[in-house]
Image 1 (cartoon, rainbow, N blue to C red):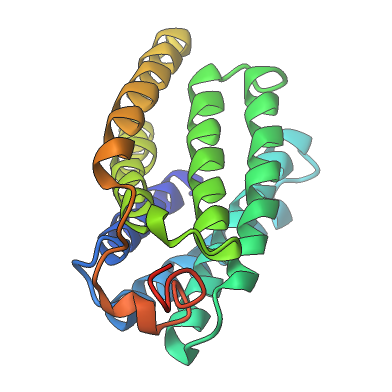
Image 2 (cartoon, rainbow, N blue to C red):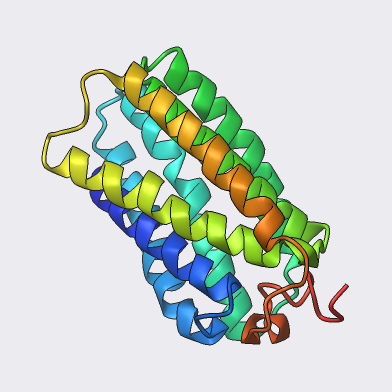
Length: 216
């Protein structure tokens, strides 16, 4: 069930990335954030209630709320034109939590591939914090590109591999490949995309109004 949720996390990250790049209108992305946000709250609640006390199942489900609340927060900001700083500082909280989940995947859960994926999410949510919480508008397009790519790499691909029971047995190799990919691709994108914020409707909504209302 969590794998299904992961698939749609990939979808909403891709849509939100397109939104930050200025290719999708902010309000048009709102429904997707609402749908996935609800899914990512209902799913872990079901998993916890049916876990029969299994600590690892409960641990895995607990992290899903971080994403569910993020997407619901994005939806509310988009629908009601709220200031984005609250979402930005919540993103810092999420980023810190993802580091803990990453460490747990490397250690307790013995899944280094998802350990790296959690590090990917830590990086992305740190960017959300810088963009929204600290109003670093120059990161808008870069954050959008990172979000869109992570939607594919950390959502779509792992979800389909898990759903078809083809998740690699050698997660050490997958972890190394993912880590190298992240460093190379995200590093190469930064000098190309950081700087002038995207010219898109988001600058008039709650997602990036706090980040770039005056093109800082």
